[in-house]
Image 1 (cartoon, rainbow, N blue to C red):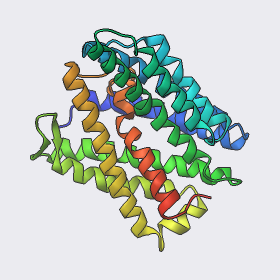
Image 2 (cartoon, rainbow, N blue to C red):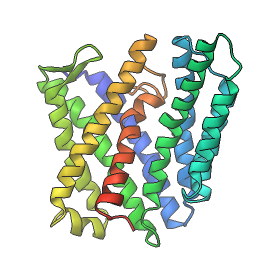
Image 3 (spheres, rainbow, N blue to C red):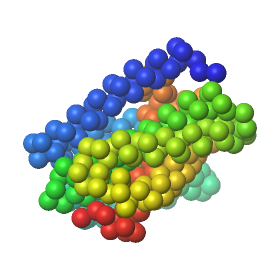
Image 4 (cartoon, rainbow, N blue to C red):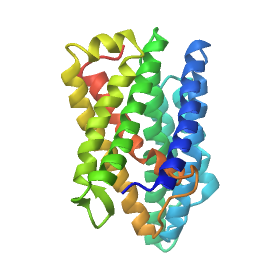
Length: 288
């Protein structure tokens, strides 16, 4: 059963967030200021990083907040400034710092867990989010195509989230992950998959390149990519649910009313971004 009040909060929050995201993509493309998308990524990554630190604290793995958070803008803007070419160097430096930072911590078990938490957190949040920028610039000398690529992955993930919530609330009977996320049902997952396809098709209408691809010979790839994006989004959601269960909290924070924290809002997107990029860039060579 759908909670009307919760649905209203989710709807208004989604509209506000969507307006900001779409406006940023438009401005970055229209005025050739692609770096503005880096700011958008940072706005999502930084509060998610703060929430991650709090979750680790509840798990009794306290990591040094300033020395973790400072690497988030470094990782994001190293990708933006060099168009992803040297971002791996910044990532390796960030990993090395997290390891060295806790090398002398005693007892050794605590130091090891802090180093692992620091390294994983930087891979989990800012590094995965940088794939959004890679997708955004994937149009090469056709920035409007790159913006469409970014829009489509967002609509696919948002479509999955919406479909899983609506169909699961109305028709859900069979729990998919009862020990981790009891409200997730197989009916909701199926609905989410169908809405992922719908999201991709809606996004495709904004670009002549995507219209020709999605509504003709490329439609099987739309279905196939929707399947893996939906699976990745669900995996990201379940993983974050497991993390919250371990930390004994319901939401990672209060970033968006009706949606919980920033990490709650991007959990599925984090896992979906690299698989979308891999499929269309390396398998189909669709990105130029």
